[in-house]
Length: 98
Picture 1 (cartoon, rainbow, N blue to C red):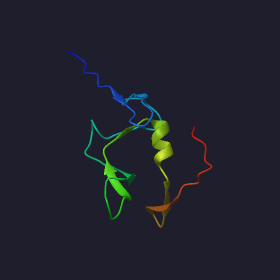
Picture 2 (cartoon, one colour):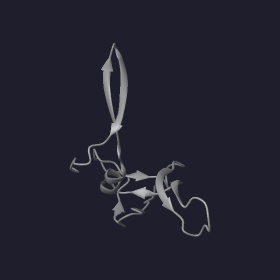
Picture 3 (tube, one colour):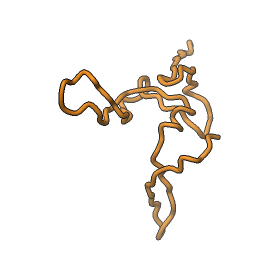
Picture 4 (tube, one colour):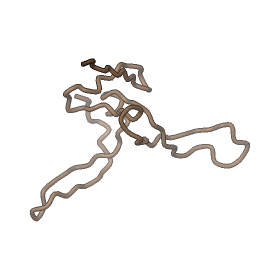
């Protein structure tokens, strides 16, 4: 039986991504595994008038380090009254990447 190797590269820094690595900091691989899109800020100077800045959805691959930098929203999961709940907040920009 042949093992199929898929190579993915971070669209931001170009680093090769190991899609099967055991790591608490996972890569985001949209091109090979899903049809998920990531929100990105866009500036398009080709318009003569109207909006040029806004949010656009892109299907990009990110290594763990770049995915960590891209994540600005923090979710905290906690138990309450016998159920799991979550709270969203803006991530502390001073947090270091492990």
